[in-house]
Length: 388
Image: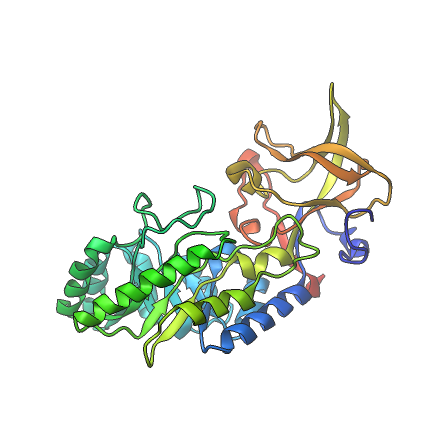
């Protein structure tokens, strides 16, 4: 098949499935999870899967079966995690705008930790925990002002971003927790951005954490947990050759550069790197249109099904999985009434005709979960390969 790997997609099984849909390669996901467990296990690190990347129930259930924890950013994500088999004692809950309803739900389920991002949030959690007669375990999310060298819309660790406490506010927050009746400070939390492939950003984070640890200890504050967040990137250009992120190098970097104290546990929150490469958006060609200067392949998937190209100018490798013909050049576009509904311009595909199936690769993260019903379109369904 020219630019894909034969047999990678069970095309014969796709004939009875309505397009567009998401296809998740269960074997690749299992191999990824096995690698994560092995590499993190070398150092005793605790991994929490970031549910915002993909909340498909079958995907979540498979991930939870490997003993990972969950990183949630809404009350409904906490609920979905529990329903998929994640232990509440392994769930961390982050987000700048947690509502009373969400906090109460998390308290009722005795989650492991709230990653807290402001003093007003600390006040509310303390008040709600007091009413319930519970002690809420919290970690301070700290904004370390580190440039992750990634897309401006997915960086989170700079002073200009809305997330976390600034370095100047940490002492005030720690003092507040010490005086609060129903809060327990159990750690600190960081998340400097997403799709990070330049590991120097993580090295900078380690330096900042080491400095911060020294400062905390000088004030008599002992931390049980250090949470480095997520953000590990993948190779979108070559998913066939690099089907897995560099987990070995990632965990080794923190072991080498981060000075954990005796008894401390390091936590991390990968999302994209867990699920992105196992997922593909499968779409059917509706028309091939000859324009003035180019050919358009018009497919039945649109920006409502995969918004990343329109939102982030993101690249997804596109493959015709039903053609063995010579390659031609096309613009691949969707049916949405927006000029931004373009998946890729000037892409080389095996000669494409109406009815062919295309796979948009590396779409397992921030694909199905970000789908919308704009233009009153149906939401795409996601299928685990084991269940097709």
